[in-house]
Length: 280
Image (cartoon, rainbow, N blue to C red; front, side, top):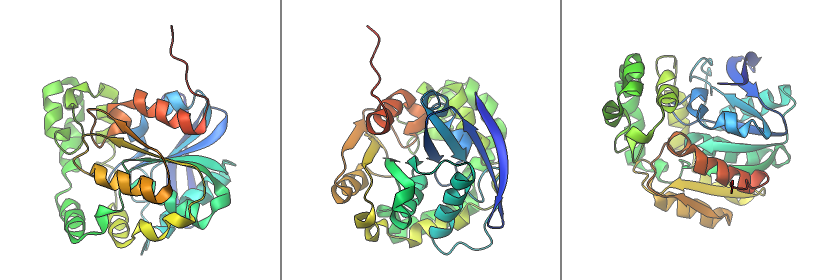
């Protein structure tokens, strides 16, 4: 990502690929299931203007090694925390997209001193404990649709109509509105993944509601109003249980961090930084 330095580290037996950029208060970016750090390409450079930002490929995703065993989300949260400690970036605010939001919550519950704030961007975890979600995880592990589309990502990025094929219904409310960089960022990871099933199975096993009362840091729930993948009712449930504000982005789907990075930036800064003053 522009302005970021690529790094690798070995953390508890797993090699992790990550990028660091910017200066200021530390901020961690955690992508979702079958995602990669490149998912943040439309948002991370703007965040790095005011923060020291670390974006990581979660284990088994992108260029990071898989975990030998991950019965629950603790193993993922632990690696993220140890990596951030290595970079001297704790305590930190965390922005977690989809499954990344669950890892952020688990880290805040286990190590409250390490997390200053959490932005849950279309966080998975409530409806994903249902049986239907278990079946979806297993089917996607077999089909791996992202890997089929990844070789054509340059063509998809150049052709707005092709974006409906990759992101229609499930990902973006208005696929042609995605920037070329965002399209490339969302489709770059799948060809590199080695084990996304481990995170998927941990995701559907863990019910985050048992941890929410242990999360004491300020939280913001951020959601696309037209998210068809993780429904808005989950956002209301997170907000209610965390006693946190819920901020909706109109005409926006599940991939809000790429579809509306400007609105995401405003929301994040409203919680963890100085509000931006729009130009006159």
